[in-house]
Image 1 (cartoon, helix red, strand yellow):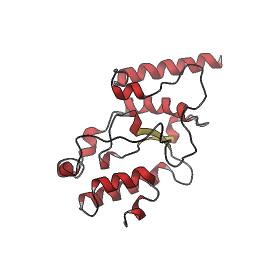
Image 2 (cartoon, helix red, strand yellow):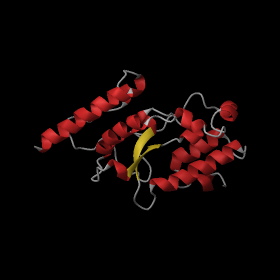
Image 3 (cartoon, rainbow, N blue to C red):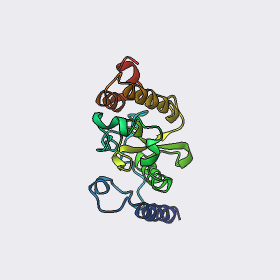
Image 4 (cartoon, rainbow, N blue to C red):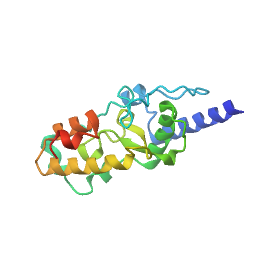
Length: 183
């Protein structure tokens, strides 16, 4: 019975990913390992928490966002809403990635499908290599990262740090990003 339930979940996730446009045959989709039916073994490590596994979630950038374009992209109020993927896409991906990370708590509500390089700093909106299920619990929950992202965006838009420096700092370790940049 357990195998049948897992298979049903995997089939439902695959259908949702296809409907959301993930299974389009693009290079990004091809590099993302799907969960195999009946498999519970994690393919991504939780050893890096509160950071994602860099082999599964290295972070990727939106090519439209550069230092030269910040005035018309990330520094425009409301811009991230124009590139944020729909919940139907991120929820389906979150379910799949919870299994890949091998979390014992499999309730999607306990995770934020987080952009590792945030949209506020020009992270790729839909690339699975930039999205991961960040726990909403623990000593460094998802909500803690949100304030760091906002402060970095403010510093970039205020020309106190470069976009490249902010991206590098948050991708190296978001928990130390502000201190690394003297913010």
